[in-house]
Length: 478
Image 1 (cartoon, rainbow, N blue to C red):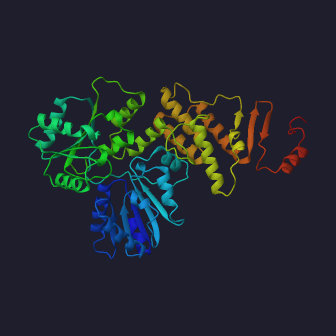
Image 2 (cartoon, rainbow, N blue to C red):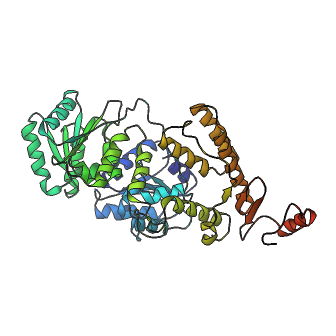
Image 3 (cartoon, one colour):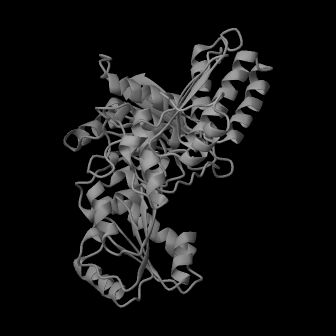
């Protein structure tokens, strides 16, 4: 809202793209309420409006009489003519495809784009971690907000009755998520039979607009206390009194979906509960098991970024220049891929053309025949030891290595000699990389230094050094 406000104050229009009609209506009401005391015109395009009303809104947009336009996929249509679009905000970005987002970018060349999501898709997260996109994390939860307690259980009527009854006794409401429209009415009827005291309603995307709007309004105003629904509630629905969600066949959902669905509860200061129900036969795919384990372990507030990182590992990073938003690299490992990508991005930002052949051969080989390592008796845990090796090798500045040394002394005690040598060896590699050195091979009697094809060292200075002291230095093969 603050970004939209700044854009409007600078005489620009703002378009807010959301994935569902319900979320568009909710944002519309929030924006109108927040900007009620300002001369800012907010309007919405959704299927809750008639065709005539939508056309009237589009005329106002073209004439520059609408400052903030909120809508679903209708905003992607080329027939919308903005007067002076300056900012595009994409909420729940993970719900849109690559082509949809690229189509929006093509509307105007000079439009600032802000994407919002609790769980970025692998492609977007990869672009952010690679420096192609700027990344900002909001990790501070609202005051008095509690994390949602998550339970993974096999489906049983007794469990459902207990969870629902506990919530209804404290005056709360329940989401029961059943993502099959053809059998959703049967599920609602089954719940009416086992929980006769509950007032149950049904909501799904195939309902008529007026019916869906009425059901959601009735549930919001507590005329019903159980909403049996599909994933139409996944994005942004904010009902503070609903603090229990039961997800039928949780193994069929993606990691981001599970996190988003769990986020529909716990939107007040009350303790919220999420029940992930699995089939009784217990047969899950390997990826489904990984997703369930990840969602069960990441229960802290602001865990969306952690889950997105798990999703990136499970599904792969996708294509930067293609349409695939997930998928694994086939020819090279992920670490080498990200390293090459970072180097290419840095080259483009500095105005150079990336030389991928050179980047593949950029690793520096240093062999000084000294014991440079993390001793096992200093750090017995193999997993932690590997993490520290990776952090040391990933350091790109001397200051990073110094901070790492301070951290290791604080966590594990004074550094043993082999570890000190490892840090000094890494510092030497950093200096060698700066000068374009490819290999350093040395022992107590002699040493050899090999340079890359492109180096920061002036060859004439090397020739002059050899001429001044031919007993100490010489050219290889000479």
